[in-house]
Image: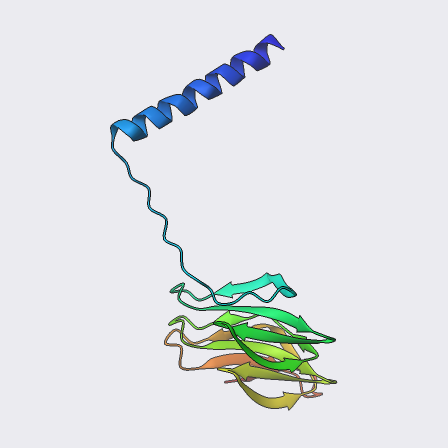
Length: 148
């Protein structure tokens, strides 16, 4: 018990010294707060994605038995299932996979693409210049095809 009290005293002393050093150095900490849009209570908080430039946010939300994406506070159409949300490197584009019934498709910039039996291989990937997005599909073939 005595050893534990000694460790606690050392910890308090260290905290006090850090506070004193910050005060003597006249360090000012600033916090910048910005809105990520309206929050939908039944949102799936684990699926919040913020753009690389921290100016845009997207998250998944539930409406009845459907799920949808909210981008900068604006809802996209509802689907039966949604995969990971991926912002482009320049933060201007968003892509994600969706399931509608038994078919899968890629949504890029809010526009749904062609349907496939399966989209495989994980998340969509943007090119470094953000102009192209790549993903793999398997339209009932032995090996997946890559689409740009």
